[in-house]
Image (cartoon, rainbow, N blue to C red; front, side, top):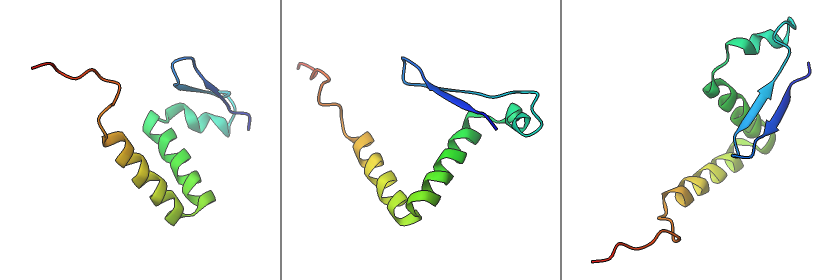
Length: 75
């Protein structure tokens, strides 16, 4: 299996594979969510569910904070 992942300038990731390869062709029907789930499940497997959950929780806290670089609204 030869699947390549490229990080693009806009920070998106592009995956490429041989669409005609019997093993790789299963990816032909995958959605973006399927790829995300596969990556997240592998992370969970590698670092352990407890550590994974801590990282996700911290990320959610950070993403909920207001952007300090945004200009404040003037009254």
